[in-house]
Length: 475
Image (tube, rainbow, N blue to C red; front, side, top):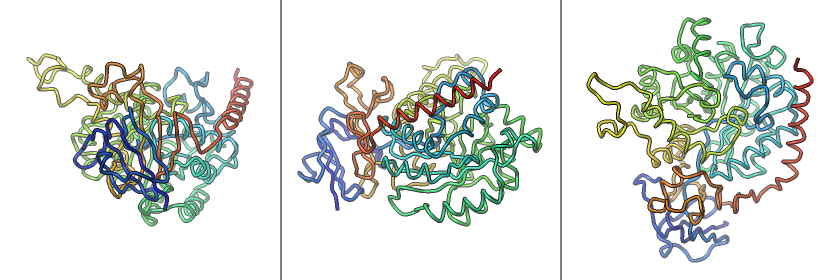
C-alpha cells in the first residue's frame, strides 16, 4: 500500500477533538488514510512520497458544500452583473441550456482545479440536468480524473414558466425521467464506505422550479437509498414571496410539509430565517451551506451564521456558482465569511435603551466570528453538513486530505505571531501542496493530475461562443 510522509511543518492545524495546533509536526499516511499525526521526530523517517513542509502551515482540507461547476462558463457575464437572483437566473437559463457534454467536463475541471489550489479537497456540486445531452456522469468522470473527493447531486427542475415556475419550459425535465435517472446514478456511483471518493445527493433546484410532488417523492427516494438531500432555501425575499403567494407558508414551514427537515438535509444560503426557524433547523438536524460571496454579489443578504452556530446548527462553506461568485476559491470564501459575520454586528440595533452600539464591548464578544471559528466551519462544519465523519480533521483513521501554505511570503510578512489566524485575515494564498486521499493533486499552486492548459483553452473558446450567441439574441 502506498505511503506518504508530510514532515517539518512550522505548524500543523489538526482540527481534531482537542483542536490541537502542533509546531514542527507532520503526518504519516498509508493507502489514503492517516496513521500518525504528531511531532516530526516521532514519525517514520521514510515513505513512498515525502513532502518537506518547512516554512509552511498544514491544515485539513476544506470542504465545499455548495457549488455549480458548470457556471465557470459564464463568469462576469455582461447581462448578469448588476441584478439580483430572479432576473439573474432568467438572464442565464438559456445560456446554460446550451452546454455540451464536452463543456461540462471542461467547466468541472476548471472549477475543481481552482478549488483544489485554494485548499479544497471535498466538493459538493449542485447539478441540475438540462435536456441538452449532458449527464451527471460527465462531471463524476472529470472529478475522478482530477482526483477530488466529490459529492455529486442529481438535481432537477420540473416546473416551467407555464406552470408558474421560474425556468423556461424548454429547460425542465419530466418527473418520471428525473426519478429513473436518479435511481441509475445512485446505483451506479454512490459509495457510502469510509474514505469514499464519490457520493450521490438528490437535489431539486428550489421551491420555485419543482413541483410539490417532486419534492415529496425525491425525499422518499433518497431515504429509501440512504443518500442525502439538498436544495436552495431562503436565499432572497423573492423566494419568500413566492412560497407565501403559492403555498401560503414561509419557505421553511413549506419544506417541512414536504418532508424536507431532517439530519440528512442541508440547505444552500438560508439567509432569511427567523429565530424559530433556526431552532427548527437545530432540532431536526438540518444543515446550512453558507455562501457569503454569492450572497453579497447578488445582494441577497447576510445569513445569521453566528446564530446558527450558537443554536448548534451544522454550517459549512459554499462558494456557490462561478457566475454568482465568479471565483471557486474556498480560502477567499472563508475570509469573506469571517468579515461578513463581523459586518452583521454593526448592522444590529443596540440590545437595550442604554446599550452602546460598541462592537468592542466585552458583553458582545461572543458575536464576533473568529479566524479559528471560520476554519472550523470550513473543515469540520462542512464534513458534518455532508455527513462525513471521515474528513474535516487530521487524526489517525481520517482521510488524508490536507493542504499547506507557504508562510514566508510578502503577503504574510508581519503576521506570523499567529500564522493560523493569518490564513484567514491575510490575502488568500494558493496552496503549496494539496493532498487528497494521500495523493498530491496540487504542487506549488498548480494541478499535477491533469494538463490544464488545453482544458482552459477549450473552455474559454466555448465560453466566448456562448457570450457571442447571447449578444446576437439580445435586442
